[in-house]
Length: 138
Image (cartoon, rainbow, N blue to C red; front, top):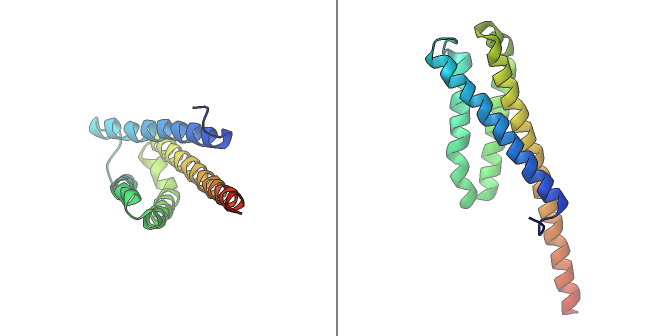
């Protein structure tokens, strides 16, 4: 889309790459659990439940965007705390779970950075549009 700025296009690309990494990592966990390669314990189940909560609150973005951002950041901190604090236990379950956890962390950092850049540039664009309107009114 050539109507978008270069920064916006880069942010969209990073978000798409993060979605591929995130869903690849998450979809690796379920088949491994179903065939018995990994055992479902608290270390495996906790991040899955936090991810489900992150997906459930997405509807807030349409009604209360600031509340959505706040809750999403708090859930993200909780997810990363859980993943990092259980990293050594994760590898004792199966070595591929470390890849899953790393993929989830990488994708969430990519989304976080892309979202912050997009939000910042969106605010700058809004401010510059307001200045142009004010100058045109003078």
